[in-house]
Amino acid sequence: MDRYLKNQIIRDLENKMVFIVGPRQVGKTWLARNIAENYRNTLYLNYDNPADREVINHQSWFPRVELIIFDEIQKMEGWKNYLKGVYDTKPEGQKILVTGSARLDHFRQSGDALSGRFYRFRLFPVSYKEMDSINLNKELDKIIFSSGFPEPFLAESETDIKRWRKQYIDGIIRNDILDFENIRDFKAMHTLIELLRFRVGSPVSFRSLAEDIGTSPNTVSKYVDILEALFIVFKVQPFSKNIARSLTKEPKLYFYDTGLVKGDDGIKAENLVAVSLLKHVYGEQDFEGNNTDLYYLRTRDKREVDFCIADESESVKLIEVKLSENKPTPNLLYFQEKYNIPATQIVFNLKTEMIISGVEIRDAVKFLKELNY
Image (cartoon, rainbow, N blue to C red; front, side, top):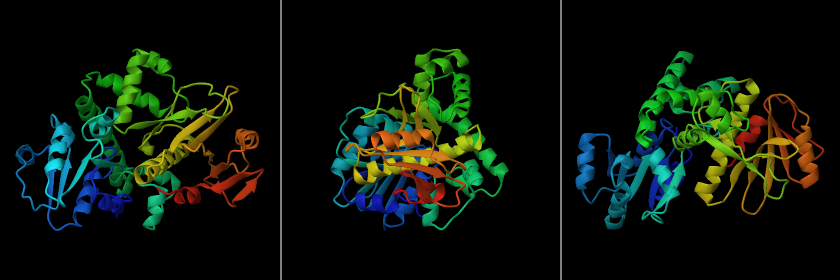
């Protein structure tokens, strides 16, 4: 199956390097190899492979290579200057594709010499939008449990999915976290992940988590930042612009792997929507250069709406997620009426779409399939 980033990456390779970042096992290497099939002469180099590492260190490839794929190059000391040198001296027409996860994306937080030399794309798990493009349908509970990560998504049994998930989390804690930061307290990190699985969809207090784990709020904040950099969780910040100031600055946290969520079906469905909406706004950023972002809304008087999509033009759209409730929530009606903000309530078990008091009541699956990305 062709992933949604493929055609745009092929176009962008004509002009700059392209970086593909995203969670472990989301399909970055597979996508890179799939893109390579569009070129006659390609070279795949994985820095974890000793033989490939020798080729990388000595740049011992033929100039006629049309596409070079560097995988895990961020593990190389001085990799940014290395890529700059390769890119600046490459033969005309040679293309460079780079894949990786945490550090490959994290370095962008500080300026460096690669500026202006690459496009960045974030690869996400398979969503309703992507499933629709390949005419694949799955029931909600199966999508949530398997997640959109390719291996569990295509697995034939629940046992295979559970085995994959256990190895996935263990591998991240023992390998990626150690590689990303010199953290030896695996038990505390594992405990934090387990606690976060029960707190999806609610504002997260680092102080409360610190008390449960037996560490400091600053340490919890650092650990959450690492989990976010490793594409395990993502934060949704409260939105306040042009609306009464947010009650709290505490973010809500969601998992990229929906199967990790502990809670009722409503919370699991909300996490699924969160991943889909984040994929959409990142698509707006990576494909079109828009400053669209995902928030939630909560005011001083404790009125809250699940999600809020906003862009730099101050266009705002509110989204509430429900399993079966086909009448607008009081909070959604309040914001729609008071601030004249477009509001949509998406419902997973809905017979008829309608508009009530200006609020769109939409079938959740149809709504998610209509997202741009």
